[in-house]
Amino acid sequence: MAETKEVSKTSQGLSVVCQSDIIFSHPGDDVVLSCHLNPAVSAASMEIQWWHKQDPVFLYKNRQVTVNIDFEGRVSLPLQNLQNGNLSLTLRDIRSSQKGLYICEVTHESQSIQDTVFLHISYEDFRLVTPVGTVSADPGSDVILPVHLSPETSAVSLDIRWFRGTELIYHYMNRKEKTNYENRVSLSIQKLETGNLALTLRNFQPADSGDYTCKVFHDGCLQTGIVHLQVREIQMSADARLVHLHNVLRKVQKDILQHKGQVLQETLNLLQETLYQYEMRNKAFGPTLRHSNSMEGIPPFMKEEDMHHRHKIVKRYVLKRNIFRKRSLSLPISKCHKLVYKMYAVAV
Image 1: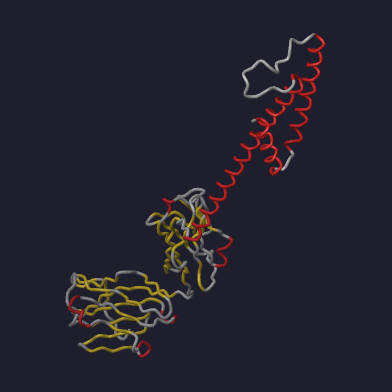
Image 2: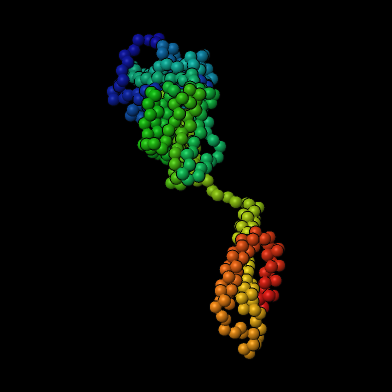
């Protein structure tokens, strides 16, 4: 500094207070080194000087402003706010060489008071990339909340935190993991090498819908990305509904045809059995007269040899009936129809 002064934190109850001990930024950013007088008295008549390490940056004295040539056009102090004791210095288009300790010094009544703030400039320049729009998932499925660093940067040394709303559900730091959702959320540690911060949520339920925030801390800088998650809605177009209705109709028609086939087969079997009953009766007893109330045609009392003859005929009838049933089951439907009509005509 140009002169030797008595420097202290306070002077007659007046002090300089910087809001933060350290401020983080990236190259090219604008940053405000916030400081003020306490109590907030007017600093318009005071001498105000900002230093970067041992180099002067900005000087306000006798209501005149002097700026270091290295900061010319890129530094300012709001003179209109001096009445409120505001001493904040604004630096624009920060360069890597400008990191380090900054000193705010105020000279008042031959005494100087000061405070300091450290400006940290991060050399890694990356951002979080999140999906555009909403991520949808089916209930019970596993869903991935995709987030990655751009450009591709290793995230192994980063402090990574995932929030559901304001609730911290996953935390990765120093190669260790912590989670409040045991066995439900995970992050691939291997993929951190390529900057992949995607979180996997297992057994997704409708109640899990909402906003999920990924926060990354590095060198005091914070990057934030938000993923919107919701249940996938079942949507069916008019064409899809029409196809579905056609499929249902075809199934119903098929069921009806199968049922008709069963009824026809049962009817065929019944008529076949009726036909054989008529045939065997005619062979055993002779033809009978239909639609007659007379006693004609009734055979006389049969002798023993006639009974024996009838017993043989009945046995042949049963044997032939069983053989015919087996053969008739293999007949095509068209021939079955003809046979049904023929049997019906005989029966009537």
